[in-house]
Length: 327
Image 1 (cartoon, helix red, strand yellow):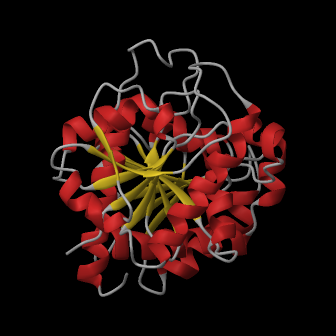
Image 2 (tube, one colour):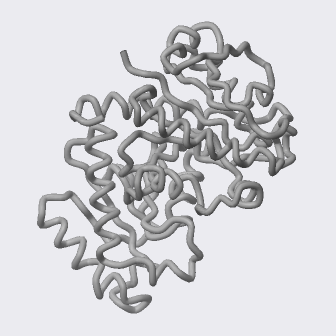
């Protein structure tokens, strides 16, 4: 039997508790998961049941939201950050990772965190979830993929200022991103021979050096060398022509050079069903592709579709890894 998915609480003041209850209503025991958090923080729109260990979630998910109780330092006030809850938010993530690495959970799904609240309340030293999870995995080199039915994108650089992108990108770092993406598509999405399109850094992919030199000086050469090993790679492409419907039929994933180059098209195409996937970890991790939404927390306006898709994607990835012969 496949173990259930561990779902972390995320920021209590945000919409995480609300969309967790909605996700359980939608999925029940079809995608069994358990929530790691403080039961006091749940809105109470559905029944929940405290479980003693993750295995209990399989049976409980049929009639209630399974909760692995994890006390936080303060109450939940929708829309109002409380530094007392920062440590609990962090340790819930650590608990989920420990459980999946012990084989008690099949994957980790994370509700959104508020990074500044964690920095202010607990000295959180990481730019985001992705970097923290890589740290918990022993410093694994990871990449962030955003996945939706219409598009998969990978930013080669993530949470850094735009002015630092050109100096952070190197031939070796881009190659590493390409290799991790290629392996992830095979192992986690069951695509035997992935097609990967790679965006240029500069407008019009540099236009043969007229608008930037990176594409001419090293990007074309490194992509060509990897293509010669058998990878189905194309690019560097002009990013402004990569994401229309006809272009998207030509690849399984697009690698972009910086955060917004990747996230703007996918959030425009399918904001509600986008899923954040971390490739390169020794365990499966997904997350909804949105933030804490403090402005609408507790107002009954939060949509859970991205979390539902994140849980479904995690389950599909578990199946794909099993078929690929990895765990």
